[in-house]
Length: 138
Image (cartoon, rainbow, N blue to C red; front, side, top):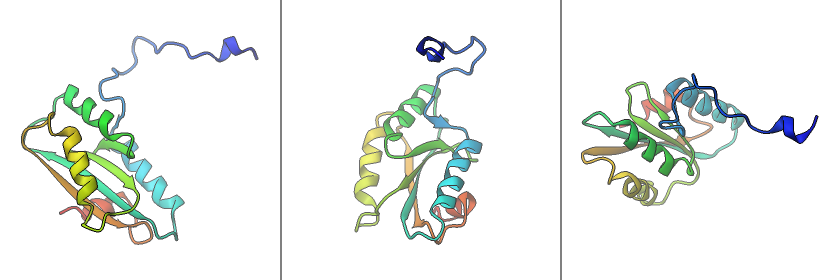
């Protein structure tokens, strides 16, 4: 097969809009969490779920900007309650994750006026699945 045949073709006109391309729908976000936990079965790794809960609807442009600014840290997706979450595998800071939380909050605060960033933290060998991680949210 030639390289010409392997080139990316443009998306068909009926494809979904690119609004929030880095933002996964719940079913895909849940699958990423489940797959990650399955791969880490029996391994003691710190993990976090950072969630933006807003008192107003987050518009598409702001949603895409939040997803784009967070996606370098891990998977970003919608939760069942329409809030935005970041699944992060990595060390918790000594102060309860506040340094990373402050950094994430600063990256999105100009997109949202009244929002709340909440964090669920746990260990990969203690969290059984996505629903278990959601239950850790305050």
